[in-house]
Length: 166
Image (cartoon, rainbow, N blue to C red; front, side, top):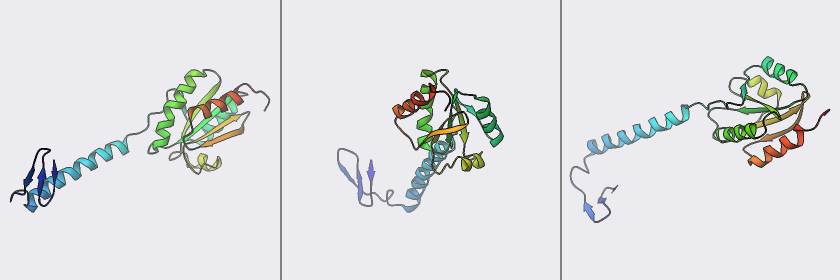
C-alpha cells in the first residue's frame, strides 16, 4: 500500500486521508519501526563474515606466508587477498573453490585477510581487493585485481601449473 499526505492507494481505489493517518505520532512510530528493521537487516548482512574456502588455508602473518611459499617447492601457489566486507571477494570465493576442486593437485590455494595481515598486503602491493597472486618458486608470475571471469583464473592456472623452472 502506498501512503502519502493525501491518502493511500490499495490497488483498487484511492482512499482519502483519515485523521489517524495524519497523526504525526502514529506515523513516527511506523517510520521508526521501518528504520529499525532496515538497519537490523543491513547490520546482519554487513557483519556476517566470509567463510574461508574449504580448499584455502588461511594465512594471517608474514611468517606464515613466507613459510607457505618456501614449502611449496616448484608447485603453483595462489594467494587470495580479501576482506570479509568486500562483496566482490565473497563472489570470488566459490569460483576459487570450484577451481581448486577442478584442478586438484595443480596448485595450492591460500587466503589472506588484508585486515588481519596489512603488512603482507603492503609487501605484495595490494591496493584493491580481491587481489590474486599466482606464484611459483617464490616468484610472482601474475596478479589479478578485482573480480575477473572464472576463465581468466583458469587460464592463469593452466599457464603456470605445468611449467617448471620458472
